[in-house]
Length: 255
Length: 205
Image (cartoon, rainbow over all chains, first blue to last red; front, side):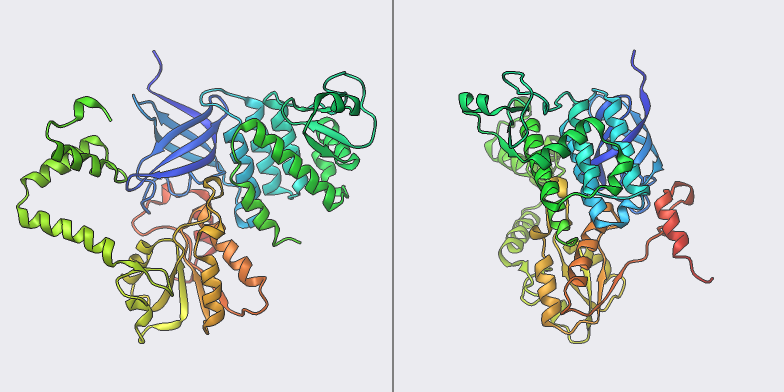
């Protein structure tokens, strides 16, 4: 028989309000993957939950099983990532990576690597520094941990090594095609420049988060890789990633 | 809807269905409300029906502060005894009611929500542009950002303050509400963020 309640480490991905004072919270947990549970009375100022279940918090929760939606009994914050929450850019980008985890996970299907990726990335943004490259690295690792790692080394069709130059990425099959194969397959993918491809390969193979701070890349390359990632992730998740727009709106403040 | 919940009488079922469409009201609650109404004296039922219609026919947004009102501008914006140099920015019209109980005598600006990126609600869906235009058109000394003390409420306030700070044509004092422990709350349940802010904001006793 399953026990009547369970404890788990979890990251708060999102919530929505329910009834007069409740909220339904979506967590990403270490042991159980994505789960949802209800926090009763949380919107009252005197609620025992207080601010413990705010999005992006790292928490330890006790949850009671019920025949319908599970009920949160207790919640203790392990890390509220307070420096993220004091900075608009960091909030916007962190909410975006939380949305990615939500989009690329299933209820009750644990993925410990994905959990650690989200937690570690939030820790870096909170304690050390923020750079758009941290988000690109997150995206690439998310693709790797969920089985969607793109092919950048050899042609998707003929398996020959790719010649330097322009690359055409086939978004449906998740890889780059060489020019011969492109002509034969009516491939209508995304064109990738040489510089962007270098960065994508670096992110995929040799990326070291400690080197990001000293890297000097052109705005065009960064934007190209951001655009590419967004398009590929959107195709894979089969949904519009809604928080992307807000990250761009906040970017306008950081010329 | 489940068939075995359906009433034999179409009039009753219609009302149950209508109640069921309201937020937070399930089939069972809808049935209870409907049977309560059936037992209610006719004049009370008429009062309720006319109150619902009257709200829909007469209540609109104030063109200045976007609070709900039956006349435009609203009573608060028209009241000359209020301090029109101070604007308190809130998320919902209900927040205005809460502030009115405190005796606050400035004006309001209702955003009608908060920025919620995952739900696709961005600044363009709120009355933020109207707020900036209002500040530019009037002589305002202080803007109190009174969004909810949540991550997205804070993000909304930060976004507004960045818009204002990036606009050299606006000089205004921007403040936010104090953050800390709630009256009647329990210290042992306070989370670290709230407690830290309460410590930061401590004052002479």
